[in-house]
Image (cartoon, rainbow, N blue to C red):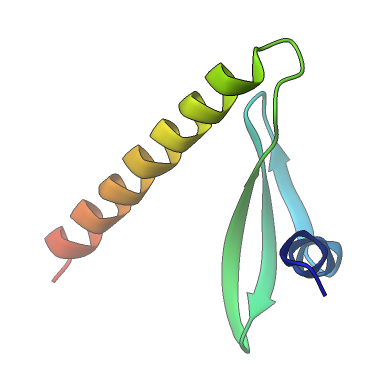
Length: 74
């Protein structure tokens, strides 16, 4: 099974919490634990290279913010 098929199967069993202009948020379970999954989707009006670069940058920024929050909560 391909990676995107696995992701789609995971999201199909989840509950859509919110959809915005940049992504959809789902509540689901992964390895038996409750998780929130953020699915970013491509923008067809953007050049593919720009869209990929922006998506990557935003994902990295979110990860850094999550790590800072976890560290602050220790």
